Image (cartoon, rainbow, N blue to C red; front, side):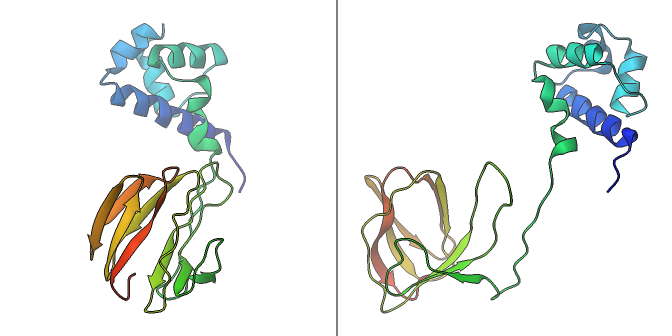
Length: 183
């Protein structure tokens, strides 16, 4: 896609306005802090003009945000990952045990934050396995069954509809498979 100059101005304007409104500031208040006229600030927020670097520096100082924050929305690629029901890719993961089926439901592409959601099914033949500690976070949402899940020194009895979100650097893992199948 060809990028027009007006796309950049519009992106910068949206960022400035977003930060200003998040801080509860009026156009007049921010303009005064950034040493601009309210009319000039309005034109910037509406993407009607291309502000100078000095003006952008004054705005970011007044908003107390990094200079580069005004360009993030413009430069970020927006990706998505759609997986129709039942079409997730079957995965053999490190630490996979008998009876543990992992189905990849999506993933991030080229981001610093790496996310891989799985649908995990535990069946009659499932091993209860030692905890699998790793960096990052985990999110578990129970669709079916019942399990006692350990995270560090805490245990959670989880049933349909329960969710658990945690730092995975403390030892996590299923401790007791209560009602199978577990999904």
